[in-house]
Each structure stands twice: as C-alpha cells, then as structure tokens.
Length: 223
Ligand code: SF4
Image 1 (cartoon, rainbow, N blue to C red):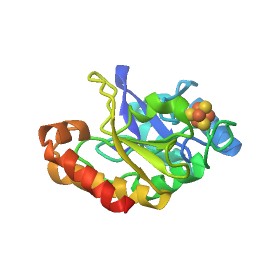
Image 2: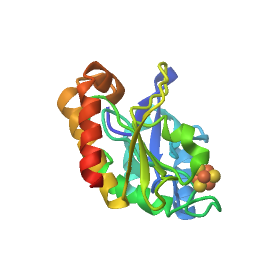
Image 3: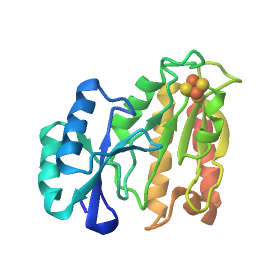
C-alpha cells in the first residue's frame, strides 16, 4: 500500500495528509478541502498527530485522488513501518512555551521522518510540563529541562494503543544539538535489534542491556 493511504470499511480509502509538524497554510487547507469534495465524502478528520485525513475515497477514484494530492503539493504519508511525522505542541506561540518548539520539531522531522524501522516510531516535542503525559507516550519524547534550563529531557519507549506504557525518563539533560544524536542512536538500536512488528519498547525490554547502553551514550553526550 502506498504511504499515506489507509484502507477503510466498504472498500474505501482515507488519504493522510501531513502538514509541517502540524501546521498547514490556509492555501493548503483550501486545496485539501477542494480535493475532499471532489474525491472523498466531503469529510476531513483531524488526527492526534496533527495530520488530516481525506475520507471516503472509492477504489476507482484512489489513483486519480493520489495524483491530485501530489499535484496540489500536499504531503501524503505518515503510515507504514517508518518514523512518523514529528509532533509538536503549540509552544512556539503558547505563552507557556519555553523554546521554539515548532522550529525544533521541524529540524527533527527533516532528519528523521520516513526512515524505515521495524514497526513505527513516534517523536514528539513539547514546550512545557503540561505535556509531560504526551512526551511519555512517544517512542521519543522531548521536553525542556527544569533542572538545567536550556537543556532537554528525553523520554524513551512510550506506547499508546492496546498496551499503553509510559516512556522512561533518561536522567541526563541534553543540549539541543545533542538531541538529534540521541535520537539517531536510539533509532540505530531499534533498527539493529528489532524485527517486525516489535515497537521500540518491546525491543528494549527484551534486552535490558540496551537501556544501559542508552544511558551510557546519553552520559557521553552530556560530557
Ligand atoms: S505543552 Fe505547554 S507550551 Fe506546549 S501548548 Fe501545552 S501549555 Fe503550551
């Protein structure tokens, strides 16, 4: 199945459209609206990861709908065994936001989005403690540090779905430029040790020494 295409009931399909870490321009939304009226059932669903889904595309309309989405320069994706679109809270504009959350998330999205992994891998960036629960629900959640201002706390191995588990806090605050190194390292561990359909948490809990390796690596980054 093409990335971004989700089979639905009644032989219909939904097309998942990604913004720029959750942000869409008004022009993009107008184009999406037109395509939904033309190819779908007129309804768009907002997802918890800041994407939109164009619903109700029939099998016969699927190919032209995909071509039209691509021609409209909308970003189809966010499915399959890949790193999913990075989620960001509104911390860039929100008064509680402690850093430019959107810019940081977009830098991570540019580097990591779409990388092949054993199952799927979710990264989230959040601007203050109010989203601690969300950070703990990501494969990698990034939060501002309260003990070392200007640095970031990382939570690893969170899961939602049918086996919700809170991500573990790695107690080594990292500078911003080290966060991508940390994510790269964890992704390598996941890709090297995981097989479909394992999520990161299963891989780490099956080989507990991997948690220790991650801790060591974070400490080496923080030196
Ligand atoms: S997590 Fe904090 S900074 Fe982000 S939107 Fe919520 S209140 Fe604002």
